[in-house]
Image (cartoon, rainbow, N blue to C red; front, side, top):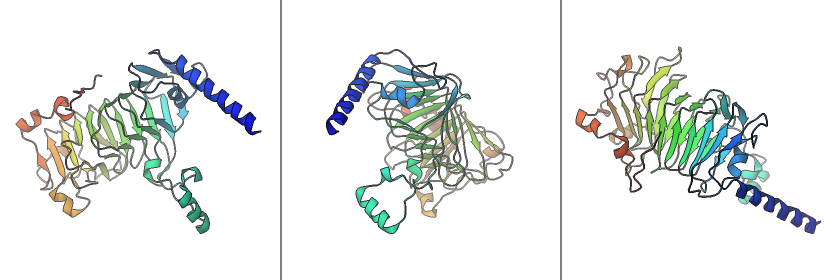
Length: 339
């Protein structure tokens, strides 16, 4: 029996290697739920992509609902996942932080302890993602990423860990913790995107530029919860964005600092009257001394700065002129994201 299993395993490995080699080229891979593409799931298409590709590979995803939990692993790069239609090409899942964790995620030590106690740990925020991007130089275009879990806990739609990421004309749907930009010193651009949520629904440590995006707030709460490290010059920058709110909303904060040196800037944005006059919340009072909360040239009824908290700041015109993609993303690799 063991010999038969070994032969079967070797055969499957050989077939997997052969499949990967057949896609070792810059040709587009087509994914379609109705079976008209080469694969029916995005995860299957990612599996055949070669590690550390030095060419641009497109995974074209036809209209449909793709219920799958996707990881773009760290050994993949130069991949673009492009939907046929932003609103009708949907990657969705429904995990949330308070779902009991499956035993396969337990460590051996934890397993023995939990079995003795007759209990199970919860999934937690950082395993609740629908899509997790670990690789560098990854693009998502014309696609929706959704976490449609009920409001029973944190539920991440997009989790990023890679550098030089680009999201163009995408939708990110969820409630609490919709978009998590998890890794310090990583860079990403969200362009022409729609992001919705309830509490802290854009949060994390990365440097992320949001250009011409629509941000929709579903309840009275906080838009951002940056955790920018002290030695990182920039965190979240919203430029030419529009903040809108549900009819029931009447008190929305631009952000609160998840960690001491949180950096968030809103500039040239349309802020509605439902943004509270204070603008920002300290989360913990001692963070008023360190949080970097900035605004410049915003408009709309929520842009009145006369009652803003004293520990936030308005940029001068000269300072604002230095806030460019080139300066914010500046590194030795000179990466400036192309559209």
